[in-house]
Length: 232
Figure 1 (cartoon, rainbow, N blue to C red):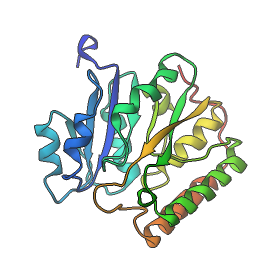
Figure 2: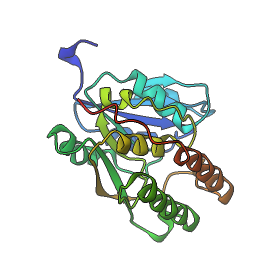
Figure 3: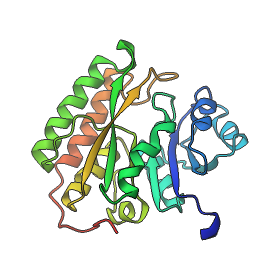
Figure 4: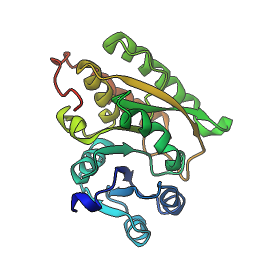
């Protein structure tokens, strides 16, 4: 893709059996932006639907949320890269408001702080796990965050410089921790959080939540890195 045709921003959408949600999600991608749907081993028609709706589809056979995100980042070419769940719980149409502080040079990483629209949008166990992780992030990285939200925006080259290695549920946390170690300016922006289409593969059960927390505790146990990977 030439620079003349390169989009300003791209949206990485990790995808595992999200055929029901994809049409709504992809129609909400901001005009002029490119959707990168990373098919992480779907057994439904997710990949075909995404391609028919104009998304750039990348296959990633290695299972794991982090593996899908990493594949999407490798495929991205735009200056700014966004990440968003592909289950219709978050509205990609709101991404420009998250991207603006990055584009303006006022922030290096912007996270969408989830605000549930209904009581059933965010399970109790997932909310409790998120609260505990926010506490651990404050203690480990000094960032007073409220939510380790899956909607986020940063510059592509700076993200690549963070050298993220987690390929499971710890990928979002590792991004935040390594960004903090590198001296990034991290900001939260409130976003509405809707009931997802289908069941969550990670936090839809107590067991899935436990595995996610285990992965994230492993990330938090990593020693602090030297200030590298500063945004350009």
